[in-house]
Length: 139
Length: 139
Length: 139
Length: 139
Image (cartoon, chains in turn red, brown, purple, yellow):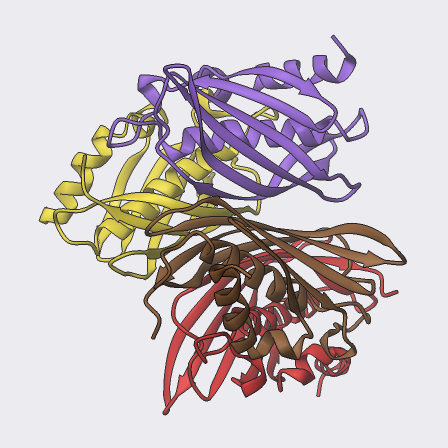
């Protein structure tokens, strides 16, 4: 495991929201992080599919950690802004969020994310996101 | 309690994500809904403050239900897209999300939301959101 | 005229895009700038109303200059990101964009803007925007 | 020239904003439209590079026409919302906006766009956009 992969897994483990949602990091490379989560009974909206907040949460984490892969080792990252377009209901066994860095930078890091739902072996794009991550000194 | 208030409370009760986050509806009027939630230990990011997904989730629900107050009784609502700008860390005893309808419509309903954090009796604006809700027939 | 008002008017005069669109600054105070523009025949879309690019352009300038009112005198400002929701066609004699600072900051300044269309003496909200401005050293 | 290509070129010719900016359609296929424009002296911001409104305008048109390629022949399209992240100054001889359909639909069509600047034979990504187009009956 590389240093950055270890840092991301340690940081992710400290995000209790990710544990609550049952999420895990499944892929880390330079400028790309994938997070996977089941659609747990505790994360639904009124129609019984995954809440937009579930889709957003794992995509935000994936995009933030993708940004972290391209920052100096001493920095942490916070979300400045993100926009999500929801394309289809979060229905299925599992959601996979892929965060990618579009433009790294010392002050701002522009990212995108895609979220796919996996149901009965089929994969469907359910959301796209576009946002900005900002490097901060760890508190 | 008005009919719409009852409908929103019933729908909200069916959103398991809101129960997981400890959220509750605290205000309903035409075009405005407020949702309040504590910053539970289970909804944190790596620095120990509330995860962006917590802030987003309650704001999304508040904005969606604000839209629902202005739709025909037989319709439900889903999020089409939202953008969130995070202004300050989600730190405090409680977050309050206020969703408002800017422009109702049969096909699209444009909404905004603000999220405030309450800490030691002080209230601070921590996020603003702008998005689109879409009426759908209940499944 | 205050110093900041003079600086904004000088900078605005250098934005040839604003001259092309016939736009002018009509209001400057701390954290708020208003820009007004006619819906010129040269700025239309295919249905004969104002192009989304016209609405966006004056709102972007209004929001950017609102940010500038709250920055140190030696700094300039550029747009990092903005999201626009279009509520109604840009139809009328004149559009008025009001840019406001929601949260000033040394690294990022979060802004909103509203655009109203004035037609036959009636004013109608046609767009809302939410974005981030970034201070930069003038080149 | 295909029917849809002809329709797009006719509609584009009616967008006076595109003529003002010197823009032209350079590529049309199913779900993808490219628009190219010079950075004219009339479309600059205060630092002498292209105004964000120029970048936005051609990206909005490219994304809107990309949506139109996937709609029934009798429908027109309007922008519901778009978010733009600006990555670098609009500096160069020419900007090229590429609009793409991510998810077509009868009520909503989700699109993205990228804008590249071409300077001295080099191409640089300067903006990404993500938005929603809505089909409407032509007036």
